Length: 146
Image 1 (cartoon, rainbow, N blue to C red):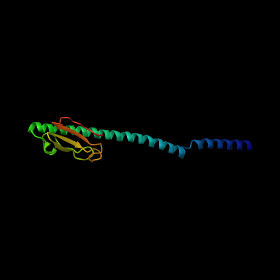
Image 2: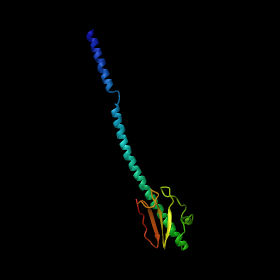
Image 3: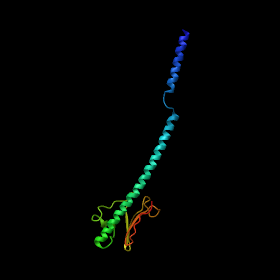
Image 4: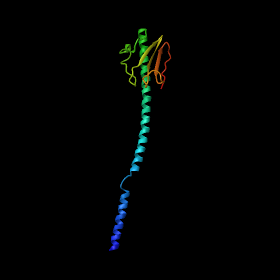
């Protein structure tokens, strides 16, 4: 009888050991998984924000081109350059929106031409991120900065 009792105890211990291994993940394993997920989320977030910045720049360039076209149309129709962008609304351009960074687009008459521009993400003149579109007799149009 002692042998049967000993055999039963051995089987119960073996069963407990097997169950103990299948209990779940350790704290280290959970932390490793969280670190890996964090790295993946960081990489995806970085790419999303880069795409957002590029999209904002493209949208501002398209807006500047549309405003420039409206200024040219005003000049063709009236024979003179507008004093401000407000003169273009609503005939040449439906509405004047703000740039993607929340600032107003600016307009400057320069001799026989003009320049429309946005100060870009830093919202300040200079800094290498300003975007502009020139037109009129100066003729060359440029969208600079990134």
